[in-house]
Structures are given as C-alpha cells and as structure tokens.
Length: 186
Ligand code: PRP
Image (cartoon, rainbow, N blue to C red; front, side, top):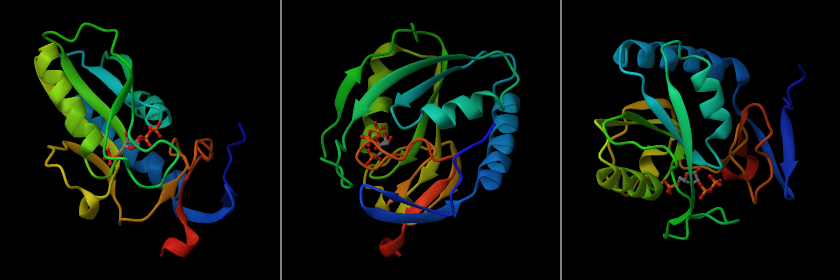
C-alpha cells in the first residue's frame, strides 16, 4: 500500500508541512484503542463519526479496538469552505441507528471552538443513550469556547490551521496520510 506522505504539500495555493507523522498517529491510536477496549469491556459501544472529517480517524481507531463495537455517522458542517467557523452548525445527515440505552462514543477529527461537539452532545440528550463519551484526534484547547467534556484526546495542538488525515482545506487534502500545518501560520 502506498500512502500519500509528502514532506510538504500545496493545497488550494497554500503550503503545508508535516506536523504529526504517520508513526505518531499510529502509536497514539494504538493506545486509544487499548484504553477504549478496557473501559468498554462487556459493553459493545457504538462509535458515531461526525462527517466528513472523522472518517479516516474513525476507520483507523476502530481497527485498534478489539471488543465488539458498531459504527454509524452523522454529518455536520460549520466551516463550509472557510478556515474560520461560521458559528452555526448545520445537520446534513442524521444518525440512523437507535441509540436508546446504548454506550455511545462520539468521534471527531478535531475540536476547535467546540461548537460542533456541543451540538452533538445536546443532540444525544434526546436520543437517550446509556452513556456518551467523546473522542477527538485533535484538540485546539486555546481555541475552545464551548465547555464540552472530552474523554479521549489524540493530540492537543496549537490554534493553527491543520490539514490531512481527514481534515480538509476547501474540501481538498483529506487524503494526506499525515497531519500537516499551514507553513505561514507558525
Ligand atoms: C470540522 C471538524 C469538526 C468541526 C470542529 O468540520 O470536522 O466537526 O469542524 O470545529 P468546531 O469545534 O469549531 O465546531 P467542518 O464543519 O469543517 O466539516 P467537515 O467535517 O466536513 O470538514
């Protein structure tokens, strides 16, 4: 398998360089999988991925979980094609699975302002799951404005624009197999 692993890349006219490598991501997902295995033993959790950005992280995270588990997706958008959140969450795809009585793990690629995750957590209240936990690959702690409980974090990152491994810039760059940072955003 040949993954897309350039040292630097140009996306929509802007230059990005490697920030979190494939090896670092793999090592962190190995630990997150083990943690989830342990904490959900005997519970068969359902992972709810927040599309689009979470699809690669969720796929790899799930392959690091060895206990029985399920998956479903919800699609939100707050950024459109911009680098700054619009401040409004739009629900573009609803959850199909019945979550009542289930152990839910909400899976995000990134928590920035926290607006999307706040929306997801509030949404869970009406669906009556037994428990709700949150896992995010990336967390921009200094940018988070909404108080949301995050149970598992892959990497705390600075308030800089990042790309790759599911994260896009105007829909491009999701296929990069590592996480990149905007070069002039340092
Ligand atoms: C991104 C990301 C999160 C959200 C995080 O989604 O996937 O869902 O922004 O930002 P927040 O904490 O400020 O809400 P985006 O709206 O860009 O859509 P995408 O997942 O399709 O890329």
